[in-house]
Length: 307
Image 1 (spheres, helix red, strand yellow):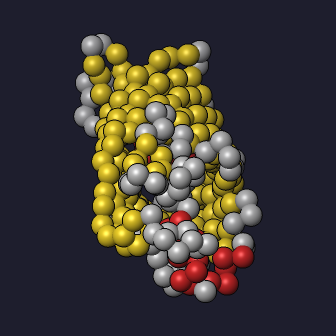
Image 2 (tube, rainbow, N blue to C red; image 1 turned 135 degrees about the horizontal axis):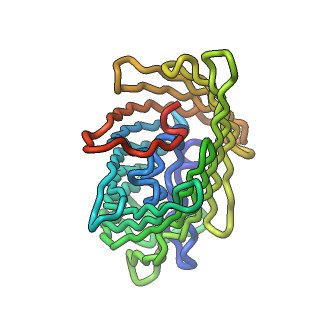
């Protein structure tokens, strides 16, 4: 059964008709926004670095394994406030390995009482496959052996913050670059669209803050939505739950173990038919944030990143 599922997962990645390919999923989506929205760069006015490791569908042969590092910082170029960012992602599933490295820049504009950021990113996307590739209902392989393709990847986004409310929209793989693996088979990076939102609620006369947040991801054919509620205690410890439509329920928890260092853990319990083939998904997050030295105080903005 596991081998059949692995074949199905692998076959979805390459096809003559160029099936869409989904980006990696993250339980800690509120902490790695630079990876899917370049406009977030510098929005918090802090220097941030986040490391996430995800073991999806633990116990399943060929299940996705993802490692991600992203960082961003505020900058001031040509008299305008902005931000720069970097994201590096290694995503492995079945016989396939994907590596992404992108640099991003965002321009910040004051709009009313809030701040609007406009961002773009550019980088490389490298896909490697090693094995015999064929569809489950065919006997001949598209190809056998090891091959890889390196392409240019682009993204763009908007991010708006006003008071305790944040809203972001972005698109990754905007050029839909094609990867040709043989004369008979090719795939492409489907254009992905993201929508994020959060609102921080401080409970009066208590040490608790409640932050509902959402991320919606679509490739134009399928849509995935994660709805999260996190509760922060004394600005140091948090716990929460996320529902992913038709797929999983996630429990999250974390704490600040040093002044600027945060650790988060997440466990996803599947609710789809795949739950019988694995032990769930596990994710760990390390985050480090600090205020850069400035000649004058910086404007403060609220972000779900600092739950």
